[in-house]
Length: 459
Image (cartoon, rainbow, N blue to C red; front, top):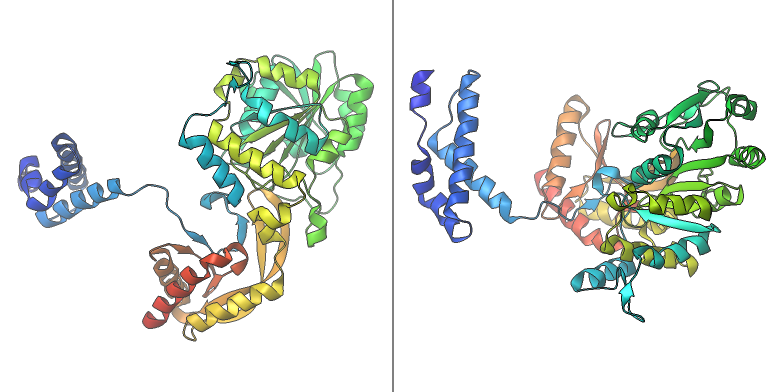
């Protein structure tokens, strides 16, 4: 092993190679040296584990690949052909053209994000959003922070620190990425009081658990799973009535930020912010980048007496939203106020897309595939922690592969699509690669067709 270490090239030898030295026209000499040194350190660690040493050529190519990668932006455009509308790994909600234009305008130069042009005094960044949220939801007041987890954390810290909040045992859930309601309450300094059972909780369970230390009754919408069979949960109307009767704030973690009736699209009913506010909720928490169809944001709407406490809490500054997302969120909310959400917001355009239109696009893809793909019935999912178990009928382009080696070949085909100039992300079902036009913008059809033509040559 000692001899293998001695055979490693020096940093100078790697850096002096003309293929590596050429990068000093772009980066500093010190940075190139650092990359080479880090690559050789990894090689030493690999040899220590008993792995054979790589050649000088491999090391140089690895250093070149690292330096080339630094020139490309980390975030890339891609085509979502998975059929999952709110795909968390792919950035959730795509933005409307108006929202993107608003972001560009806000970021191009200076803006009045916290400045009152009329009197020349400092202002609040919330004044551009709060009236829109209140108009849409019927809330007395509203506040926007950087995501829904931050909104819940702020709400609990401001209203319930060192006090008790009652939650149904069936709602003490993990939303995703280890975000658990009990952990959030603990971080907020709140004592969680669980009532009921996993499958059944009644309003009497909440009432019996109320003490002089209780400051909140909380509902957590199970946005990413379903409990079926013998179940019972307390509706927001019941919880609101109890809170009103006992003088206790009702806190509603809605998650998805739905403002439209999902049942008209054949989906199950998703609780809306408007319903929560009408029920007397003190604070409703929801996301901007899920069913609302806007940028990542956490929105709090409810009674002014509670929202004002959140504004004054020190944590509010730590979780405040930036000017670019404020601009995009405002543009998104305006779509709802104008009644044009189905025509302008991509999430709702995809959800409301007609199956016959999707079929025509899938047929065009099948033709581009050179005969290796066929159109079949399928299902799209909303995703993003919204409407679990609820799907939309769609038409898929299916590229079947031989059953005996189907999984490996299907993986290979999906990889080729991902390696397209603009990556095309498909899904694999059993022994076939599936592409769903519902989540592909019509203007991206040419990208998909070109990628499929490349597949047909290698099939």
